Length: 117
Image (cartoon, rainbow, N blue to C red):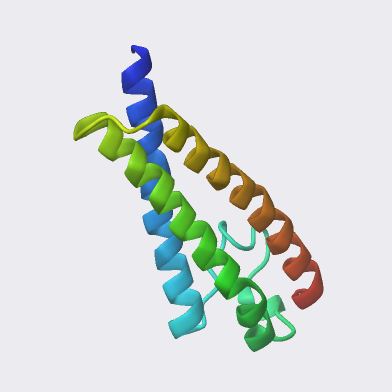
């Protein structure tokens, strides 16, 4: 596997995760379901003290995370298969995605401690 195909694979994974995160956001906001594994690694919604409060606390953050994953993966796929994008733009958006990933992870852990027993 050469370097370009490795980056293409990573871009496909990131874009796919962005789509899945959008689905998780939809389930949380409109159906009231918390997708186990993404938001809660080892708890179910039965353990939630305040589901509406949890939705307010994590819903917007999940949407930002999903959109940043879609943007980073989409730009990478565009750069790989359509037209090369400036390297600094690509790396900058990847850095933004990684910062959002860390921010979301910390926020999800904090919300889990606050709203779940």
